[in-house]
Image (cartoon, rainbow, N blue to C red):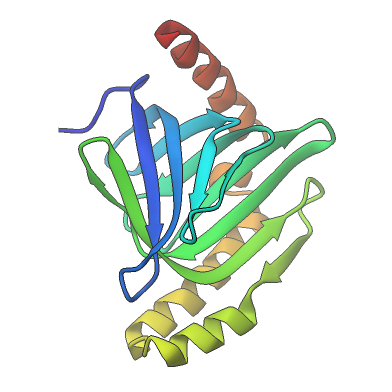
Length: 178
């Protein structure tokens, strides 16, 4: 059974070799369905694999599509919404823990919907070091194209009003909890 909206979940990402990559200490679950899990957080503690800790600087809406090989973090800043799209395995949810494998490639999308593809060298290095199977490499490349298609089509979290609507819901469920 999935946690109820308003409850806190922890998000953990791992590398292909199952080593820890990053932990988001606490995100508030806003919505869960057969298609998607949406969470929100603000100034949440993030712990890196090396133990370094830092806090996010702004509110964010995180979207995890079931079966998708990417997830999005929409960061709400004064000058617009910035997106960080992690290319990774479909997520798993067990109790209050959401986890996935991070496959290195990322897409940073700016408020004007231009974008940069990040960490291509890291993907190539890790695919050799960790011996990514051909189907994983193929899924990662397909997911990258899918993210870029979604950005171009303003689909899913990139559609006008999506982030604002879920941020308002986040404020309501978060306030109910405090």
